[in-house]
Length: 97
Image (cartoon, rainbow, N blue to C red; front, side, top):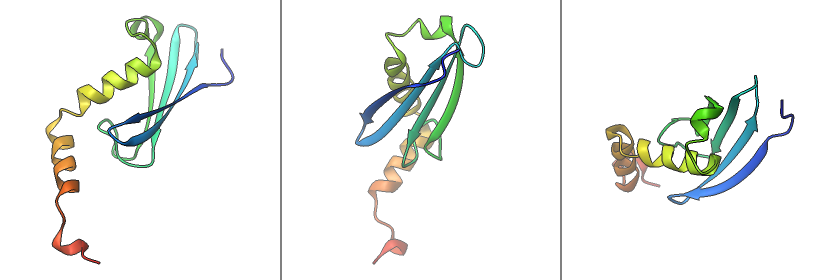
């Protein structure tokens, strides 16, 4: 079991994201991946996602950064995310300062 996670910092569409990765955790042949951002992401409304996956599934990707990047790209095509992005672009009459 890996005690200390490996930390990766990436930027996706202008959003700073921290990826924390522990292999062989909580059990052998599994990985724990945490994705953290200060704002909403396509796969989480809170900016935080905890994800467990079998080692074999992660081996299909170049590395954990590649996995998270592809996850972001796949989920950013959802109608909900596209609507969110559009809403963020358009000013609201109720947000006037």
